[in-house]
Amino acid sequence: MMADPIATWSSLLASPQAPKTAMSALELDGYLTGIIVTPQAAPILPSAWMAQLWGNDEPIFQDEVQINAVLGAVMIRYNTLIRDIDCSLQRLEANRNVDYRPLFLSGNQKPNHHAVRAWVGGFWKAMALVPEAWCALAEDERTKIVLEPFVAFVDPCDLAPHEIPTDTDDQLDEDAALIPRMILILRKLARIREAAKRQAPLPRHHKVGRNDPCPCRSGKKYKRCCGRA
Image (tube, rainbow, N blue to C red; front, top):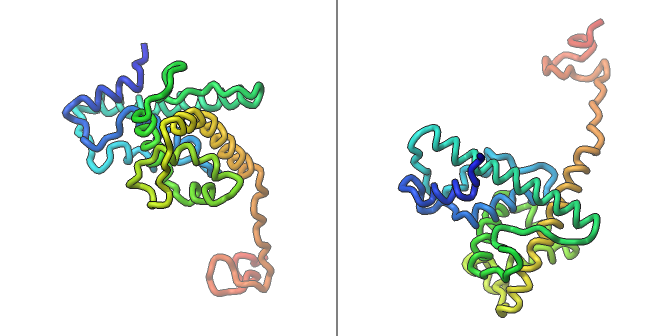
């Protein structure tokens, strides 16, 4: 039976090998979600986001078995999130029902604000990997509303004074309830951009004239070099 990836990660955090700056389970879930829904044409590769899992320090693993178990658990969680988000997006498009549940949601209970804030902290770290993509979203009047529920739970230290929300508990409850829908919208945006990139026409190769410089940079004319009959 395959081990629960969140339990595997939590077990690492409880061990002496874990750096103090490693992400909590909630942060990890938010971080992986942010990576998956980043609104750009190309996905963020694991080689770009794996190193951020530990914060400022590196873990000291007991052996290769533990390394494979921990990193394998992260990838299992990553792939599970992709599957769950995409399936929920299909259901949203089919019947307008939002049934996606991030890790900070447990059943139909109202989420704890501290749990949401930890999850969003991980999501924010994913945004920092490609700030240009997220800044473009935040600066567009049509899409910036998608980010507003997340901003309400960001650590005030990460915001400019004029950006710090003055939300009441009731408003925070509303923002937390909106986050699942925004995750699906962001995933839709990412998939639209991925599809647009796949459908874009390939650039045409420039035709070299016989009297043009040879592309091999020999300094000769093409007809007297690689284009010689």
